[in-house]
Image (tube, rainbow, N blue to C red; front, side, top):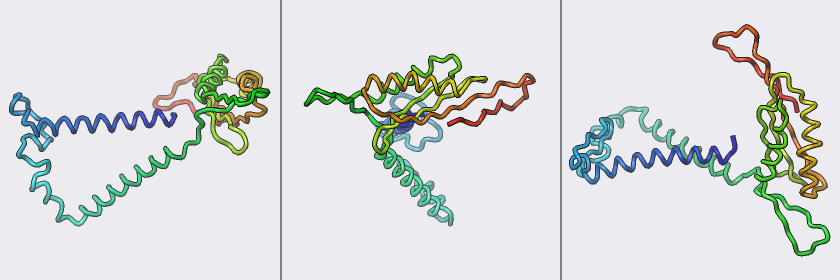
Amino acid sequence: MRRTVVNRVLLGAVGVVLLGVGVLVLAGGLDLYRRLGVQPPGWWPLTAPDQPVVSARSRGRWVASAWWWPTVIGGLAVLVAGMAWWLVAQLRRSGLSSIAVPTPGVSGLRLRVGARALEEALESGTAVLPEVERAGVRLVRAPGHPRLRGAVRLKPGGDPAALVEHFEDGPRADALGSLRLAELPAELRIRVLQAASAEPRRGRRGRRQPRVE
């Protein structure tokens, strides 16, 4: 799963939670439950404008317990550490947004191709083989030259050697020719699925063969 997909799912989930909490707080603060005759959720404390979000009884319920403050401080520390890790992960991007295309004989002209367009072309070129179940390619940073990092999943009985030959002579060669690049190293990971057993076993799935690099 790509980082952008994870970010969108995470931000979408957080947004939905915050939106729901905000609607409940607004309804209680504006006394909409009484005005509209709507029954508030039984677990929600704020149902009227003069009612606090956390009652005095709830505030003093666990304070006297020895585990209360260590749990609160530990939970907040884990939350802050997780947010810091997420922020660092966003700043340390391993992927490239674009790649420069050489323009020999033309001065003052700079061309760049979007990394996602190149990745999609390589993925579609790799997936044309009928034995390919799924193919993913990423353009990442590397010392000297950008590098391709691909992951391919083959159907049972697929030939990894044939796939490597097809990738080298097809999608990768086309990318080198189209972009006029002298070198574009690639790291390809291949995983071959194991055929299902003739006698199905209840509650168990077929194991996957180890990936070939």
